[in-house]
Structure formats: C-alpha cells, structure tokens
Image (cartoon, rainbow over all chains, first blue to last red; front, top):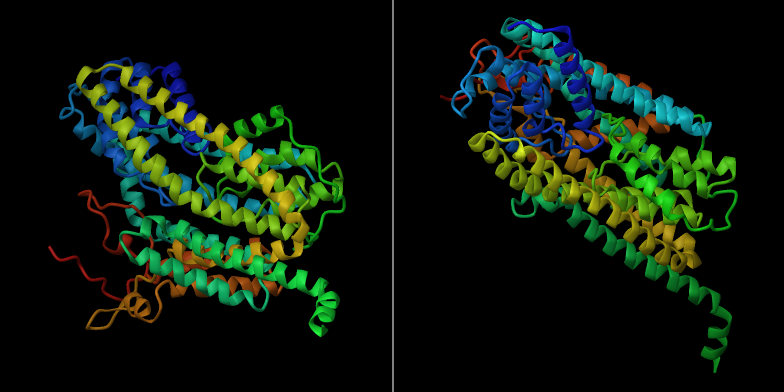
Length: 274
Length: 304
C-alpha cells in the first residue's frame, strides 16, 4: 500500500487528538468505534474502518480502564488494526478482520508503555507544580497540563505513523523488544503502582495526630473487609465513607455539646446548687 | 517541603458567591481533570487547573491564593465526570474561608468514593450498553450512524451530569457551610477523622504492590504467607515508611525516585509482581508477568 505524506500527517493528527482524549476532553472520541472509521477514511477504505471499529469495540468493552489499571491501549490498537485490515485488503466482515486485531496487539502494548512512562515522568513534575502553586503562578499550572497532553499526543502520533510505515515487521520487533526487556517494564509498572503511597503520605502529614492513628487503621480494616466480600467489593469506598461519616458526625455532635456545656458551666453550677 | 501551608487564610471574610459564568467555565475545564495525570498525585494538577477560575475570584489576597493553590495539589482520584460534585463542595468551603485542613479532609473524603460509583455507572454500564449496541450496528449495517449515536448519547449524559452536579453541590455546600462555621474547630476535627479514615481505606483499596517470589523446593509463595498475616501488609508498610521519610524532611520527588529505583531493581531480581504485558513469539503472556534479569528461583509454570 502506497502511503502519501498527507495520509501519514492525518494519521498523526488523529492519533495526537485521541492520545489526549483517552484521559481528557470528551473521553469518548478515542473509542475504537469512532477512531477506526476515521483512520479507514484516511487510508481510503471507510467501510472497512467502520467494521474494524465495531469489532474492536466489542473486544474493548471487556477491558475498560478502571481504577488506575491500564489494559493494552485501545487507541493504538484500533488505529493499527485498521491499518492492517486496509493494507492487507481484508474482507469487511466480523470474521474477516479478526486477524488485524491480533497483529495490532504488540502496538497496543507499546502504547501502554508510553502511557506508563508519561505518568511516571509526570510524578516528578508534581514537584514543579508545588513550586508554581507557592508562587500563585496560574500559567505554570496550566502549562504542566498542556505539556503532558502534548507529550502524550506526540508519542501516540509517532507510534501510529511508525506503525503505518513499519507494518507487521515493526510489530514483531516491538514484541521482541518488550519480551527481552519485560523486567524493566514490569519494574515501571510496580513502581508506578507504589507512587500513590507518596500522595497518601502527604495527606497523612496534614491530618495525622496521636489519636488519628486508630481511625487510619479502622479505615484500612473496613476497606479490607468490604473488598473481601464479592457482593460489597464494588462499593468498598462508599461503604467506608458511610462508616467514616458516622464516626465523624458522632464526634462533631459530641464535641459541640461539650463546648456548649462548657460555656454554660457557671449557670449550670448555680442551678445544680438549688 | 519548603512552604508550609497555613492553617487559616489571612482574609477570613466570606467571598461573594461565584457567578454563573465562572461556574460554567470550571465545568468546561473539568473535562481536563486528567490532563496531567500521574502516579503520585493522580488528578491533582488537573484538578487545580479546573478550579483556578473560582479560586482566583474567591482569594483576592495573594497569600491566600498561594495557600489555596498549594493545598489543592493534594493527591486526588475521583471519577472525571462526577468531579464537579467535589468542586461545588470545595468551592463553597473556600468561599467561606474554612480552615485549610478542613477543606483538604472534606475534599479527599468526597472525591474518593465517587471514583467507584462513577466507574460502575459510566465504564461498566453506560459504555457497554451504548457502545455494545452501536458496535453491532457498525458491523452489520456497515454504517457510521453507530459511531455518531454513541458519541451523542455518551456526551449528552456526560455534560448533563457535569453541569447538574456542579450547581447542585455548590448550592448544597453553601447552605451547609454557613451552618457549620459556628463550630469551625469541631468541624475541622470531624472532617479530619473522616479524611484519615478514608485515607486508611484508600491504602487497602488502591494498594496493589505484591511480591512475585516463590521460594524453595516446595514452591512457597511468600505473598500468600503475608496475606495470611495481614492482607495488604506491604502497601501499609510502604505508606508508613514514606510517611516517616516525609516527616524527616524528604521531598516527595526524592521518595518518587527511591520508589522507581527499588521498583526496577526489585523486578530485575523478580521480587515484585509487575505486569509487563509482554508476549513471546506465539502471543502467550509471560509467567508471573515478566522474566527477571536474574532468574534465581523457579517460577511455577501454570498447570495446563
């Protein structure tokens, strides 16, 4: 398949926008059912794009990004599945495009690496954000947001265009690379999973005092109990908030009553005397 | 951290209620909640960006704006479509110049449970229904109507939720806050109790760090031993360890680098669980998620 510069440029732009949209903006443009027809149209086979989009969407429904966990990337996956379906001239039926979805997997995995790397690097950028906040630098905060969107967009664009030219040969190289260096990516995955503990520790520093330790452990225990039970695990944090709110409201009521009584201590004392 | 966030704002006179234009602007900006998503604070920086128009209107005192911006960079993870609910509550507290600690506690307590509700509502209900139906339309009729229908339904729901929650919670919060300011000290204490309870719950709920190690002839799985002692022991210990480091004066960025080094070195020796999502030439996933650089123990092969 001959690819013109214009086509490559358009694919880059689409991947750029979708790379951002997967986390920000409308958070729906990036779904394969929308992305694949657009890529199909750019490559000159709109109908095939629609069918690939439908097929990929059905696969995707089973793996939505939930609670910070990241499945192989749907955007790169969808774009590359369409590229393969069009370039290999596949039949526009659900069964016909099945092989294209498989060929796209190494690219989808790589797209996920890019996301993991970006999220790791921008954990370091939070230090910069703290500085901007201390200077009340509104533009600085805005620029950090712009910067991450730009980085994600460009990386997604580059992978997609590379995939457009490299095809399945590049797919095999990527697969071999991720196989050989799987421990590095697993290390990033493990480290990324642990970085939120820094965020928790900062929050603890704000709220923690002697007697609060009990509440921290109580919340920890409540969460473990709820998540261990299949029927309540989905609602773990809401249930924890219910219990926590009950304790907090009780404490608030008790403390305000103590204060009121302390204020009327003199009058009460005299009445008691009578 | 060099900058200590003050407990109270300098200017304690309640600010004027926010006008419709500012509220709407924040709803639109809330679409970019995750623009600077990262593993340490998750949506914190996007959150700050989204509510800045409101904060700038509320805090005309420059020092107060600095304090407010600094504490609005706390860890935050909520559902991107339900976030305007948290915004409304937080803005009503900011407007009444509540103690910074109160705002921080209320924010994390309101935001965290919404994450789970939102996932269930949107990703597990709305998307499968709309996308499932329209995907079949795309494949059978080969028409673009499916995609258009999906976009229209999904975004109509999204924006009704965003705008509705913002106005509802801002009104609700403004009413409740004036009632609570009479007992500000007690309210701060109660909010901290709820906040710290929720942080405890978050450690267990989001803490995913586990060990991969399988040791000895009898293939002892260390993680299942630890789970027998106390589930999520490792996340709890890491959080407490980092809390101790931060108390000792470590900056968050130093903690992040430490975690990165320990994470990658640990995986070189196969200590931590981690999913590389890599595959061998036949498209099979790797046992234990990855192949360590130094393989000094035998990972059990899954039974066929």
